[in-house]
Image 1 (cartoon, rainbow, N blue to C red):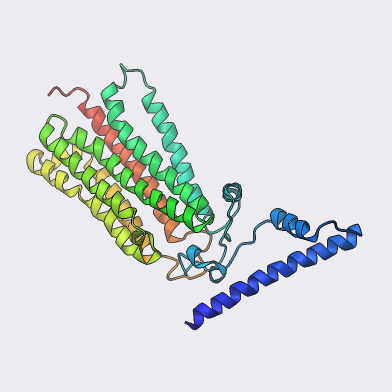
Image 2 (image 1 turned 45 degrees about the vertical axis):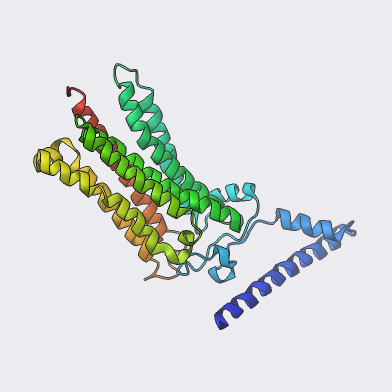
Length: 325
Ligand SMILES: [Zn+2]
């Protein structure tokens, strides 16, 4: 209770300090120019040209307070899309989150372009369609994510909207990752192939519906969010055990990219665990405000996991090229 009222008092103090600073700047301008036409316009002009100043966590409005272990370096509310996009090029608490997924998104866009533009005698249309699910999942997930982190400080409405898109993107990446793996894993077995693809699609749609609820996006639901996506990813154990039972472990490892799949699962779970528990900033509060915060590490895990998966499924596809069903 006291903390809250202290926070409010600090916020209003901050606002009055900024206003006073603007008034002082205006007075100095009057001194320099000798005259001023409209004091109100002058204040507006100064406020428009003034570069934003990084804020401490306590100074942020409640809707921007997400992780109390990141003490400083936050962007203030910036209700302008241009200002938000310009802030990509400055250093603040979201810089690492934006760039990790912006670079990942652009990388997957070019990998997709390279793969999908192969001539049809090198990569068949069927392969292109199957891999398109994965590329679409990766590009949409990473794309929604960097947009969310860029626009998070715009306004409560924009924050909420892009946060939901961000979570939707994660579900799409999980579905998109399952499709080629199931397709090549059960290449000649239509029933389990389409059964498992339907299973992950239903899980994905359910996760998207849950993501759309306002409660799910609240900061204190961090653990639940991490859990929903981990469970979705872990549902891969059903088709993996199925393949192990019918084909044996050796075939699963040699022909069905089991090792890349395990590495991918480890990276997603490890990343989600860091994200849910807010490690390392929980143990070093105020020391990871700009770099090495849990969310950035989680982002890096996601990009590396998607690359490992791409390597695994294209190896599987290559081995299936000569298979006749
Ligand atoms: Zn993120």
